[in-house]
Image (cartoon, rainbow, N blue to C red; front, side):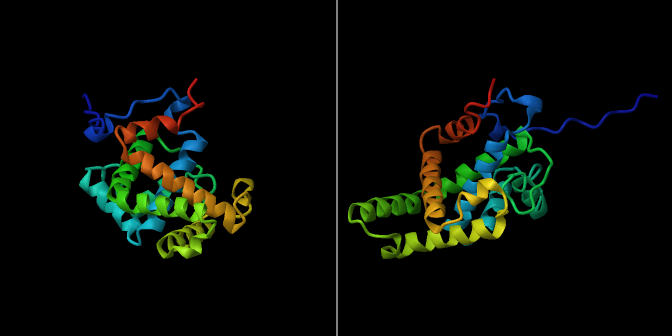
Amino acid sequence: MQLNSPPAPTIPLILDGLPDPSVPEGVCPRRARLQIDLLLLAIEALDLGGSEAILSTADDLDLRGIIKNRVVLWRLRSTNPFRRYSQRRPLTLIEAKALVVITCYLARRLTVLVRQLLLAQQQLNEKQLSAEHHFRLSEYLERFRAHFRGRMNARRAGVMVYSSDEKLDELALDLLAQLLFCTGTSGMQRLWISLFDGEVG
């Protein structure tokens, strides 16, 4: 008697616009896993409801087949090797695509705020003033530092680089610029391709 094999899972149409890079075993390299999680960390620092927004956006974009619940989301993000409780499981390209699509959609929602904060930083630099002189920027940086220190493993060499407030602030501002990059024309595709620069052989 012939047994029917289960149907192959369908890939949500929204992921079709992101090409499959030629990476070993079809899994995300270390740098891509790290970068995706850090961008989501920046979104959570910008928006108090950021973690809820990630799950509700997964619903809105029909991605709940990949990101089923909060536990699955935590496992996917914990493939970031910097994490305090880093998972050894791989991050598949489909999972990474889902996270990148969500990141870009949330970044678009936050475009006005991201632009305001980057402009404020530029103006403060010109006046040689610290971020403490701009409440909203200072709040974002403080929240990002708290998120990073609360979730990353301080004993890892890559995390030790960010032991000072100054280094973490630089990282937080770099991530703001990357989020703005996501919001432009073909931003989703450009972010996706940038995650694999130098990784594709």
